[in-house]
Length: 333
Image (cartoon, rainbow, N blue to C red):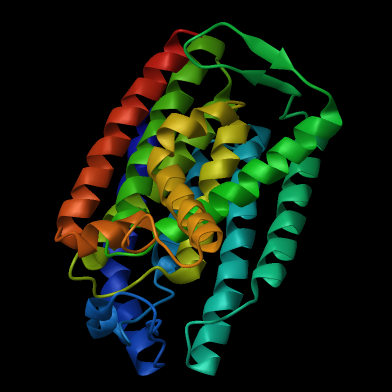
């Protein structure tokens, strides 16, 4: 199990060391965040803080992955590599979006339709690869029970695509204040690392150790990134980072064949997304009335007087609790 510690330490050290250099380079290239005028007015002081900082933990986890490939050679690490490549592809979509924002000098990159088309294409490719390699089954296990549902493949494909694209965009919405998406996802990655070890212990599948190592690598990278992303942030992850993380969270859930576990583990992501859906729907139905002072909900809490640090710490504690609950549910299956 030493490989997990190696992955975490390597990724954390690389991220923490290279981050200042990356931030400096982003400043020189004038790759700064543009704040929407409709956003919180107090966020205007974040204007031009370097964005696209997600490349920090993406790169650090890649370096750690190379170490994992050496320590766990052969096909045993292929599942983890597949998961990483899908996440990296989502990160590439985010990179294109960030680049277009910087080029246009505004907070509008790819259109919503362009994003969805690209995301669905990547999700479909990932599903096809997992199926071809025999890594996915058309069964859904229900945590806290021994119930397993078998559903038609076509429906399962649609379900997978919906969950993957939904998760990617939910994590993207969560990335709205300093350290929120990175802090919450750090806990989620720790959860998948512990889950991977548990699944290995009960099934002796070394692919689970490789997945756990990948989760540790990303957690380490996020830890190093958080040094500079926690309030007051010196760098933002941008869509480059948030789409990468969203893809990774979804891919991990399907790789361990436990997609339903995203409900408790990703509760913060879900609440953020639902707050936007509720706000927009209520606004249209009532001709301009609002449920929240501002959506996503982290902005609502800001307008209620809570600091960014308080909101992030609360979200992390909630995720820690729901992740522990989810893991207990897995042990009961």
